[in-house]
Image 1 (cartoon, one colour):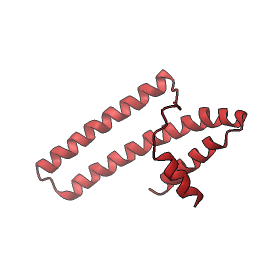
Image 2: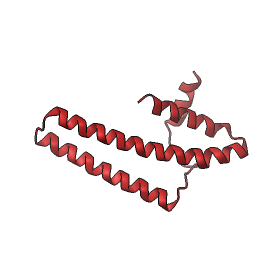
Image 3: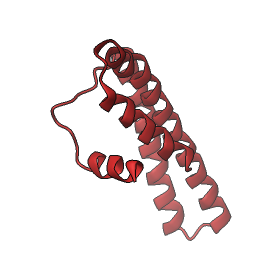
Length: 108
């Protein structure tokens, strides 16, 4: 029940809260996302060319692994900054957000 309520709450984006990442982290994330974007375009081309399904699936798995890498970087940043700050401010909401996020990552 608690997890369900937390998930419903998180469905809406929270424009009042923002994450601030270093330029180095942003650059790393953008490079990874650009590479993933290229991989997705490549998958579309494979499907257009009627490439063997197993080969397409392997490319999809590579994209999923790359996205998981992006997720891990963001989770690490969240733990280092947001959670650390919330400990000082005794903000339980941020802890709940992190728990929901970790649960989602573990379901994969």
